[in-house]
Each structure stands twice: as C-alpha cells, then as structure tokens.
View 1 (cartoon, one colour):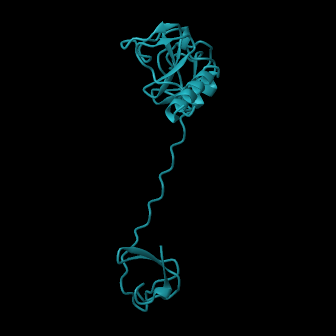
View 2 (view 1 turned 135 degrees about the vertical axis):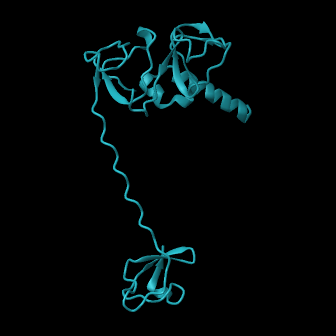
View 3 (view 1 turned 180 degrees about the vertical axis):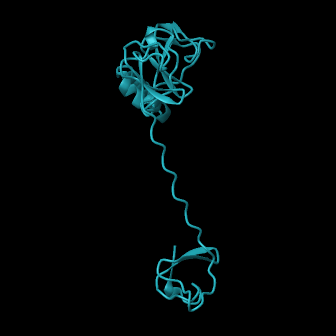
Amino acid sequence: MSLIEEVREFRSFIEKMAESVDDETAKSHKDVFPLWKGGVEYKKDFRVRYNEVLYKVLQDHVSQLNWTPDTAVSLYVRVDDPTIEWPEWIQPQGSHDAYPLGYKVSHNNHHWISLVDANVWEPSEENPTLWEKQPDPEPEPEPEPEPEIPEWVQPTADNPYMIGDKVRFNGEIYESIIDNNVWSPADYPQGWQKL
C-alpha cells in the first residue's frame, strides 16, 4: 500500500470515528470532519464543514449545490465553535436549531443568556422572560503610550544622563547604566546598554 493510500485510509478511519462523538467534542475538533460537497449522500447526524463552520445533518438526503448548509435549514443545523464565548445570534428556523436554556449569544452589541429551552425569539429587553441581558463589560483601559525616546545630544555637566535614561543613537536605542553620563554610546560603550 502506498503512503497516499495509507493516508486516505487513515483519514477515512478518523472520519468514521468522528461520527460517534458528541457535539461538544466535535466542536473542539471540527477539522477532522469533511468539507461539504454537492451530490453526496449524507445521513442524519453526520457532520460537515462549510465556510469554516461545522454543521450537523438533520435528515438523510443527497446534497445539492443550491442546498448549502448555511441556507438549507431543514437539512443542516450549525454546531457553533466553542472557542467563541458569545457567538452572534442567528434567527432559528425551528425547534431543530433553537437555543437551549443557558445558551450565550451576542446581539445588537450586547450579551444575552437564554432563560428558556428551545428559544427561537430574538434577544431584546422586550423579552425579559426569554433572554437575560448581561451587563456591558468594562472597556479595556487604554494602554499607556510608550514614552518618546529622544535622540542622543551632547549633555552638559549640569544635565548629564542618569541610570535608566534612554536615547536613540545611530538608529539604535541605548540605556545609560551609569550616573552622570556625558559620553555617547560610541565614545564610552561601557556606560550604555544597547536595548
């Protein structure tokens, strides 16, 4: 058996084993599932990837190019990526893709948690018994701007560079490692540390 045949056989084995895992496990390893193709006989509960999203087949059928997983909602249901804590809310088409109790979504720049099972309603403050709006997160503080590092200039005896002072010299950044430093990094390299 050639290496290519062995790889194909191993890939087939991985796909066969992947059929038996639950959705939570499948979401964590979506790359083992095959890409969706038209003209393929898909069985119920088989999983496929389409546009980097994992979908589960809802009923046995032969796929058609105009029935893609993102549009044929009676044939496929999306299995969301677990690495996205608050995935964007998508209008469910029925009970097969409704949101379960406790599911987290993002919608209209807010985070929501489903308060009921089989939730097909749009998250809004008008539905307080169906969705719980989460407090808006505190904005990340702006990082402190890096201080400007000045070009090295010949200091005077009254204003020498001190330990920790940083300068640019010939396109490089140096830090003074001595106090009362009046020499350039070229004239007295022992007084400077290149950063």
